[in-house]
Image (cartoon, rainbow, N blue to C red):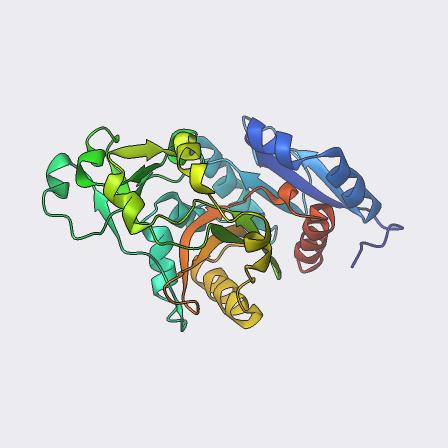
Length: 304
């Protein structure tokens, strides 16, 4: 699909954090989009949207209350202009509890989420109903630097110095491979990446405390993550299963731009667990992302 270049190009306004703009609005994307009839225009979020444009679509990744109000004011006067995506829908992914609740609602065979609990205060870990090792993740998943600070926890004592509140998610051995599924409207792609190494019973017996993810390299002395041929041998999840997850999550989340992380439980090779969902991920890491994003924007704008 491409816009008829004899007509006016679609005007897509974008409002992104400086970090997101730097990694997403690349010259290659601007060029490819322009060649196919899509003009990407930077929005000034400090000014009313109704004074900018005109726009055929708005793309955004900003979360403050002023911006949300700005979007609401614009939408009330321009109900037919698509906003990608609704702040209320995005909000679901800002909590690591609500994000995975959506997966549990899908009822897809051989899929689920790891056992996890929320720790709000110190007394919450006195009688833990969870197995170690576990991963401690900040409860808020708003894309901030703090939200990415995680710990691999080997025992209950390892929880003592982790900032509250956090989600404690059981670590599942998964062959050192994680599958990332990128979604952009009707498009999806599953890729595999190296992940944390499996943890043997022997290693668990001698490991103490907790390791920040920045120190995960300490675990890789024994070959952390899937290496070489082992990584190559790891098969992508079945296409029909990925498709069911994509369609189910799109419907449940009411989002167009997201990705989710999937692991395969080594104890049961047919069972897959969704461990994280992210809004507006790093698409530039995908091969040919310029075509994917341009096609998505063309599809959105042409359906107005």
